[in-house]
Length: 290
Ligand SMILES: CC(C)(COP(=O)(O)OP(=O)(O)OC[C@H]1O[C@@H](n2cnc3c(N)ncnc32)[C@H](O)[C@@H]1OP(=O)(O)O)[C@@H](O)C(=O)NCCC(=O)NCCS
Image 1 (cartoon, protein in one colour):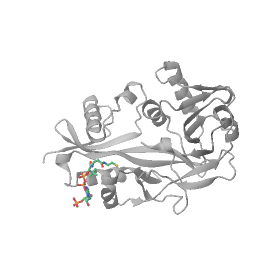
Image 2 (cartoon, rainbow, N blue to C red):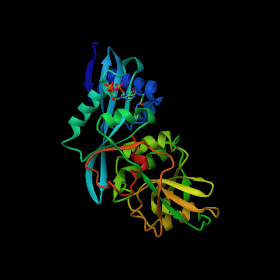
Image 3 (cartoon, rainbow, N blue to C red):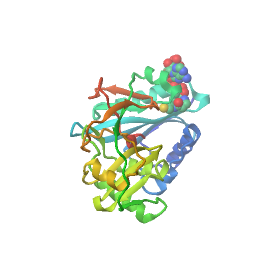
Image 4 (cartoon, rainbow, N blue to C red):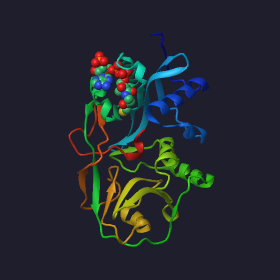
């Protein structure tokens, strides 16, 4: 097999196009919108094998700026992993993963990733260990919202600019295990949380959430300064609400009497290296998934 290895090639348009095509084939995900809108992030670094002009095996390492127990740290997420069917079980992705880990090990505190069921054996072989995440649930007495929350429309340039401004100026939503990466947040806003973004002008913050059967799931709260959650909730509440669930560790939100419950939908979370919350209940922020 005559394959070429390449990494860190985003400045080569042909190779980047080949990667985008690869990701559509392997994960049915088209990142060209994220690219076109100007939010592409060079902290997302590819390690790939090419057969001619085609990417046939690839892994990416996303350098994440996180706050861990109040301190700013650099950690790394493995993402966008795949090998085209005709090239599997030849050791290609194992080799790429080793190269990526070697590149990052001296500068990143630990590694994490979210695995599909079919890749569990592969990540075990790469040395990752399996773990399980817990969200925080707060039981509440629902109440009707006061005016002041405006739903964002990502088709509108001014709304996108507002979202990006909030993302760029944000303080992490939690001190324990929070994330900064504003370009990654834009990915979530453009692709999967498009209908879930509200801006509260009085507080100059965004809340990304959904409501289902009286349960409000909060994916992220994005602002320069975070008020207690009771204040945020007063803008989005509904009389039918019975609980709020947080997809990040809400240590800064002044919650009382909350409980931590196992995620019903397992993220296939894996860790490598010295993870500071090993053995305790934690969650990696939802909008930190790459
Ligand atoms: C998972 C995947 C990336 C593995 O890529 P690959 O290049 O075939 O992996 P490698 O050949 O380097 O495998 C290394 C080792 O991992 C393990 N492994 C890999 N694929 C495996 C599988 N399907 N079942 C069991 N073990 C597997 C084996 O121990 C293998 O060594 P061996 O072939 O000597 O037994 C590839 O199967 C794939 O793209 N799957 C579909 C997309 C996907 O699941 N991506 C990950 C999303 S999180």
